[in-house]
Image 1 (tube, rainbow, N blue to C red):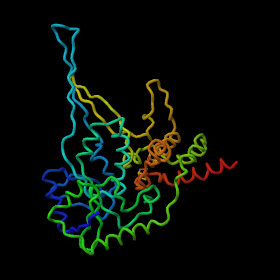
Image 2 (image 1 turned 90 degrees about the vertical axis):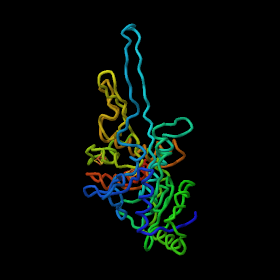
Image 3 (image 1 turned 180 degrees about the horizontal axis):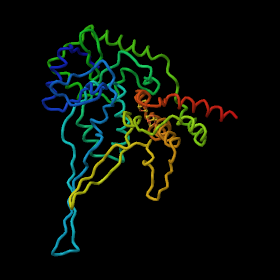
Image 4 (image 1 turned 30 degrees about the vertical axis):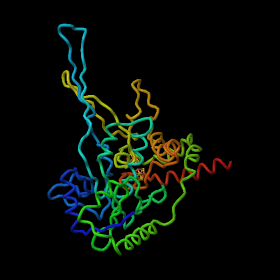
Length: 352
Ligand code: SF4
Ligand code: SF4
């Protein structure tokens, strides 16, 4: 990857130039927590704190209109009616600036589900195609970070178009994709020179801060071994209050609900984020609920990330190790600890 350099001052110029023909999402302080918002006057990007919210909403909005419809009845021929449908595919081009590698990697978990050989979700695929990710490598770590344990790392490029690394006076910039390379042709970039070696040192030092990586490779089989161990799952879920924060903040959670909103003979179809941690998520029309307890719901969430998804998608874990769910959970439910406990308990069961 060719390495270039951009100064702290020129970052602002670059963002302003990008904002001429893109919606540029930047991390900003919103009531004390860092979240992505479109660049606007007076909104200063916060680059020294990890965003609490993930960047997924730039590509997979919390609420989106999928289509508009109008029902028409022919009064001359009352048995004849028509429903006109207008698809509302997103058109705008966007840039997500300053996401961390874990957030960008989360998009690769979405890609396998929403845009594959069998299924192409046109809303997701169009936004993904029209959105560029400029990612900021980490130069410090938090106690909840475990990206290095799930196949990622503090300078991971998966899901990104450009990787920036903080160095003295600015950032080095490396193109990850062809589109990223085109972005780095802007005049604000200089040759990286000796800044590139400094960036490599930053990456190495940050990786070392994370220490040794726990091995989750046998998690799918061990989770299967404790699948029917109700006592284990009840213990793990004891503190959970089913608030759903873990799923809404997670860069890899992609569950959604579809609802229609009608006003007279017109209406719209909406897609809205959903959470598998909610009682209503699997509540059937009959009143039966296959995941009636929070223990069953937590079991599903953990298994989905560390067992079902890897089984379906070539051993890729559907967790990027960002730690958002751990930090934001009011009960401090720790997904790492649950999988490790399942690995230990599963191994014990297998040895009996
Ligand atoms: S954030 Fe914590 S308390 Fe809320 S649903 Fe998730 S695990 Fe349960
Ligand atoms: S499960 Fe938790 S640690 Fe893993 S990607 Fe989601 S929020 Fe991050």
